[in-house]
Length: 398
Image 1 (cartoon, rainbow, N blue to C red):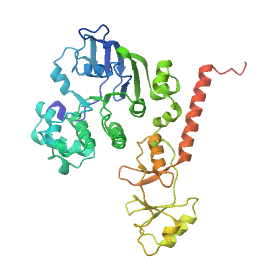
Image 2: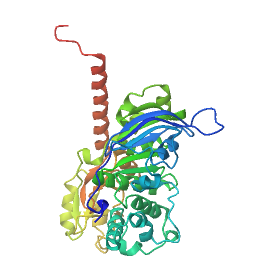
Image 3: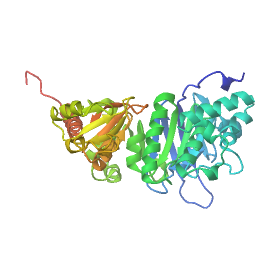
Image 4: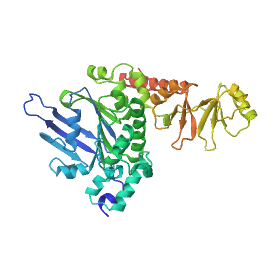
C-alpha cells in the first residue's frame, strides 16, 4: 500500500515568499514580490480586478507557471525546485473549463492521477465510487458515462472529484464555478462548502466575484495590479473595516447585505412552523393550523421530509388527496447555506420563508424575515461594540 492509500492526507500550510513573475517584453512584472501565508485547512480566496495577477499567482503554486524569483513552501518544504510533474500530482487543480478528457469515462478521468501514482485497480475503483458519492453523483449511474453525456454542473462536480482523487493536502481552484448558470453555481458553492466542512483541505481559490469570495473564503486577499495585497483578512473584517478606498470601492455598495453571507443557517436559531403529516386526518390538521399564527401548514412525509404547503381552503377539498392540493414545498436550504442563500429562497417562496432540511432532506425548521432581522441586529451590535473598543472606553475613574 502506498503512502497515499493509507488514509486521508492532512491539510498543509502554504507560504509564498517574495514571488515574482516577469514576462519578456513587459515593463512591469505580472506578479511583483508577493508574500503571504495560507493556513492549513482554510479556504483563501484571491480576488481582484482583471489583469491583477491572481491566476498567475495561483498557477505558480503548482508551477504550471514557473516563478521568475521567490520561494514556495508547502507544509514547510521548499517546492520551488522539486520535480514539477511530481509536485502537481500532490496538488489538486480545478479550472473553469474543467478539462475532462472526452475519450475517457468518468471513472477513468477521476482515476487518472491515482493510476500515475501506482495505485491498485481495486483501490482506484473504490476511490472513484467514494468520490462520486461525495460529490452527489450515484456511482453506478455515472462511472461509465463520458463527459459529453453530462451537464455543465455535473462535469464541474467530476472536475472537483478528479482534483481530490489522490487525496491531496492542497487544492487550487481557478474560477471553477464561473462558467455555470447562477442557480447551478449557487448549488455547487453550497456543495463545495459542505465538502470542505468534512475534508478540511487547504484551498486557494481565484474569483473575480467579491460576493463569491465573501461566501466561500475563510480569508480573502484583495489584490491590485502585480498581485500587490491591498488587504488580506477575514471576510467580516474586510466588510466592516476596508483597508482603503480601493478595497471599499471593490466591495461596492450593500456591505451590510453582503454580511448575510458570513452567517450560516446552522449558526442561527431557527423558527418553527405549523406542521402535519400526509397521513394525519384532516380534523387534526385543521386544529394544528388554527392553533398557529400562520396561514398555511407544512405537510411532511413519513420520513419527515417536506412535501406540500396547504391552507384551510385546501383542507375542505375532501375530494382530492393531500399530496395533490396546495403547493409543493420548495425553497429549501441546508444548514451549511448562508443567510444570503436563505434570503434568496425566501423571495421565491409563496409563504415567505425558507425550509431548512438536513442532508437527508428532513425538516429542521424555517428561516423567515424574523431570523434575518435578528442576525442583522446581532451583526450591527458586534460592529458597534468593535467601534467602541477601537475608540477606547473611558475608565470608571474618568
